Image (tube, rainbow, N blue to C red):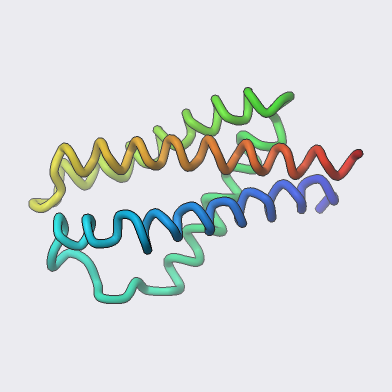
Length: 132
């Protein structure tokens, strides 16, 4: 793994953990709990959560951060990846789960779009600072 790839991965991962941690833990945790009720565990399962973050960030770096020629492209492609990934999850849940509403799906898709755009931008900036 190159130094550029490592910095891209670590920068994207750190941004993702900080922002999603704030979103889920501080800002929206109670909202998700009230909307989803018994569907949510009292404590998330650590292993699948860790695997999700590691895998999703790998996808961000491989498909968006490293191929992007500038931070603006990383932001745009990150937004698209976030919309597709979170949309797949949220629309599937809306289609199959009784407690998953349209408003919850749209809110979560908007968050995933924004979050992935920001994190891919941070990863791109980190990767390109290595060469300076």
